[in-house]
Image (cartoon, rainbow, N blue to C red; front, side, top):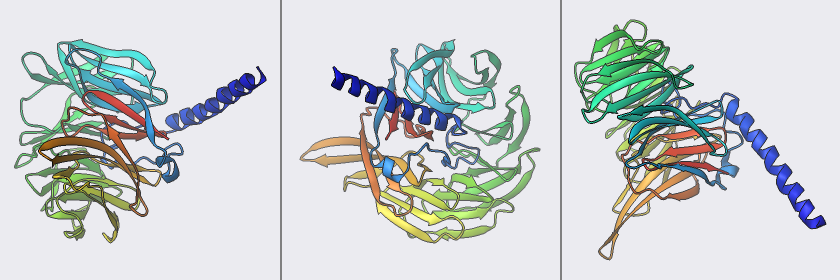
Length: 399
């Protein structure tokens, strides 16, 4: 009896302490309010609740939130004040709430019949979600209060778009050859700007009062964030953008480059370290880039000097990453994909990897039980957890 009492006291008190610390970290400004975390889509989280390199070595699956309805797919996820909100599409478009630490289902926020919900963002006290109406495939952009009450909704043109970025009270979305700025407050159009080309699925970033959009394989255009007036344009090394401070970073087939947000002047370029760079994440002083050939590298954000390069590949026929990495707590996280054929049998493998941001050493590899992939599912980092919003379920990892 004494032994059982001692064990009960130990198991009852220590997790409570840990849970309290985790909840504090989750609520102390560790929000992840849109894909990429911020308007520059930097993928950086300053507050990781103790999830540092040592803790990342012990990373494990903490909880999952699987799709539970017929034909349901997860659309997006954000973390606000210790609550994870997940959008999905199925018989209806839904936004559900979960305790970001424990995974407890806190219930429905929004349920829209006949809709499939996709990308989700939280702008102040407004939830912004893009949706498709079934069966007509009409696209909509909607704003909801945190209690699920709809504030506004607008119909969107049927043109190719990669989604939107929220910044400075605006929702920036490129579709076809037009960049549009919608007001978060009421969904009205603040301004539009012609792009002179199509951005495809590339997203705009907000930096230094400007909106920067890539078009084609490598042409950047910057616009005044208040008026939409053209600020500058230039050729670039690629169309994948992240931004932080006063710098825009571009990645593409030809390498990695940094450009001044004010004016677009080139600061540095690297064309040799990685093969086919595809996605990036930036911290206060380093740029982390993943390529489509099994490589991950870090560069000094100010000078472009290579800090390290490491290999995440498994010598498979395909070692690639189709997802933007994130960083925080001295760790870089990325989701990677491997396809191999051995003895006439093909295998697919998806992993979450964690690398020491200072050295590039891989400190953790975790297999993900993923059957279906799209390629741009969001990876989040908030309050001691790493989250991956795969199509079939949402994963939460913690030390």
